[in-house]
Image 1 (spheres, each protein chain N blue to C red):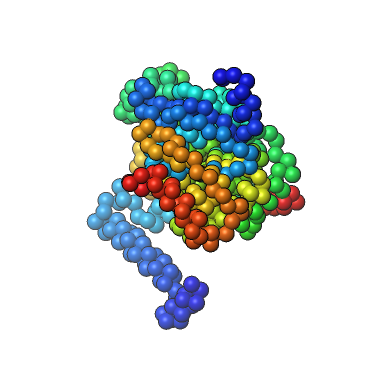
Image 2 (cartoon, helix red, strand yellow):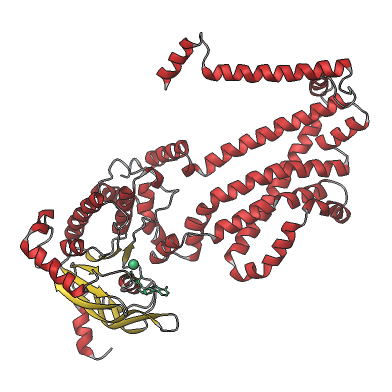
Length: 261
Length: 285
Ligand SMILES: Nc1ncnc2c1ncn2[C@@H]1O[C@H](COP(=O)(O)OP(=O)(O)O)[C@@H](O)[C@H]1O
Ligand SMILES: [Mg+2]
């Protein structure tokens, strides 16, 4: 903490980081270096960059799954000290439990924190309907396609009721059509719920299409090279990707990432 | 499917492919039994060691109905098998879970597990009798010894090989150790534990027979021993075939139990439990 000024500044943001760093091993692997940023409530931030640039590390730090090596990290105005339940994560793998139906999987976060009520079950069912699975409430994961499994995982994430969502390449393993459709739905849902969202991807167009701000990251050492503002309102149509403004942003990000991207 | 079958039925004069297969099997079986019967009648097979099938049938009638003396022994064996299996399972699963959850215990126990795995455990049976005396306790101890290993190893590996991503999910939800155990580790390990239990039950049947061979007081094992000693091979065969049927029923029963417990491994299981969940939550959603 370097004075009252920074506390003041960070209290208005959901996530605030100053010179945040993370090293692994004996300190020789610098996964993230010198990251300073503020994330506004309700905003959508994309983290884009080649693999190994520290995107996952950043999310895991914010979720409190790993400890920082240097700098400051505040979430909801409090320093991150360990795993926290006011943050929700979603990964490339749906990580559903095979022995639970879709709705039971969605109810897992609630079950872990307290006794499940009638209202919780109703909420879980509504979330599954919201992600387009109204006919699959009682289906088991092995009966669902990859895209549908990710929808269940998204509903489970929303069931936690947290307003900070950390998504680590959530649709990265899906085919392009499914991914595009899920991106559009994700944008509709998080905009409606006003969730603050961090979304990791290595697809530049996807990063820009979804976000208010794009953190462009570069590897060795992992750092945020630049933060690019996206001026379009959300939700926005897929067709925006053909506009000259959009393509100018793609070119800008590509430029920051350098030759190899 | 139904259409295809009915077409086939017409094609082969009212007999389906399945029925034809069954008939072929039955025919081959009858021919084999017939050859055996002729063989022992003509003296080509020594009738002392290869009693005529008709004599075996008569023995079945004798031991099951006329004398009815097998029931007592069959009951004794079955009680022994299930008691030993249950005891061995509890020991195996409990020890497996205990070792699985303690990396330290696991490290120090490993050499002993390897030694135990390499030793034919039935060799310890006489020692157990010396220790516990004749009777049910030593018999059950023998069965425990032969059948606890598969549940032990399978539980251990099931508990140790928990998916890292799922563990991280539970951690990120702030789950307690107990919750991780109950909601993740145990359900995840159930199919592999059940596979161990299947092996254990088969081993328990063999273990019970060995225990009865040694103690010779009651059970199918001692009955086989008595009949062979009196050169009543037909009745000994009837006992052996009884065990064949018992073994088959045990196998089938475990298959059923497996489908019932690890319901998410089969379409029918998922349909059944999924429908039940839908009924249970119907009013809430
Ligand atoms: N648990 C760990 N132990 C050692 N090195 C790690 C660990 N996690 C990540 N790293 C290293 O940190 C760097 C950043 O990794 P990561 O955040 O996973 O990148 P990204 O998600 O952008 O692909 C990589 O060089 C990776 O090898
Ligand atoms: Mg990653």
